[in-house]
Length: 640
Image (tube, rainbow, N blue to C red; front, side):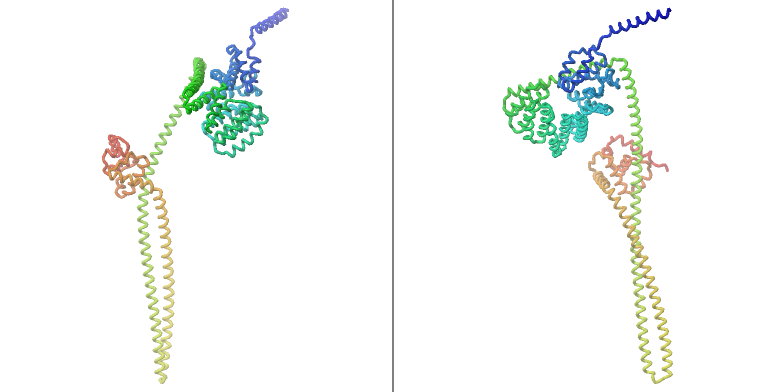
């Protein structure tokens, strides 16, 4: 019973408490107005700015203030008004710490600002700073916005970022990156299926091709743009025609540019149309028409174009010797420019105050201290790493110098041995030639002896015939003579066969010896050619450096001023001296170990008897420092 009574009393109390809390809660002044401003920001920024002026910024909570700052910055930027970056800074801070979006759903993709509020905040701060002349900081913010937008499905934001990155690279004359972002801008515009954006992207692409002198591509893109203009509003069509005329003016096609400008002015007058018209008239020396166009430009309240138009009018009146109007428009241009500068400085002062308020926040200060400590630690680690790498590189460089010196010495020794081998091969070749001539002479002598023996055989045969004729009457003598003759013929045949065999043996021996000598000569010549190629390659590699070293040696020998020698000059000079004076200098080097190039240079200068003043000047050191090198050389001496 008691529990039921308590329950009945507790329920009305809870309801009463909820009613009291509801009565105490004040409705947000943002509410529906924020949604309306968000939907109008792209097409009607002037209405958004008027709407925001009726909102009490201090009465908003942190999230609504971030959204308010983003809308205010976007509206002022679109209307060419001075922008206070303190608001967009707070928006960036809020959206950076609330990456998942806001609680009321402003981050939906249906919003004209896009679904990525942090990326949009970075983008609008970047374009504002770029117009203020802070191009480096603006470019970094645009790249951060691009990285942020690539991780989201916000195609509209990517489209804006690509367009402005194309403008940044175009201003920096980086044609290749400008062309890249022009193509990305066009592809994004085709995804959005917005005709005016596609036309603007094609115009940017034509600009990139024009800066690369690809005028055929520019004409082709312009031909693609014209059919799309029919579906656009007059204001958008006029703006696009003005851009096309500006591109044609840049490449010197003034007549086509004037036709497009006249059509654009007829559709919707804009300040930049009259300004381009004035520039064309000025190029054609039609100063009266240029004056009219620039005065029409001043009818529009656009400070950036007003400054340019005033300066050009001032130059025109100066050419006409009208000093009064010249000074008037010159002062008017300066006053407008000073007003823009003051607005920029006011924005910077507001940012400074906001940064000061942020610094005194304890949480942010602690975070800054932690980040600073991490950065200092990382810098220390990087410096230590750089020192370690520098030390290792220095040791490696010293080792390479020692190896190069040893290689130079070994090369000089190798060249000396190659010269000796070539001399030995030449001596062997001369010996082989003389031996071959001796063998030829011996063969000729043997042939002559064989011919004489044959001649003697013929004489004996004739004498035998005569004996047979004289001894016909004497049969016994005849028979005896026949036997004697037969025996002599048999002996002669035996001698003849023996001589023929000996001749063939000597001929074969001669041919084999000639072949062996020929092979030896061919191999000798091949080895000579191989050695010559090695020498030629080494001479080609070293000819340039040795020529430089020889020139330096001649100047030093003749006491001429050679100035400070670079590392390459020192290497060339020491290599030349080692090779040129190897026989005298090699024994001296054998008394030292691990000489650096500077120490080797000092040793050579001492040997050349160069005075201390010139030695110090050649080595690029002070005269007292020579004592240090002298002590180092004593330490480098090898212990016996």
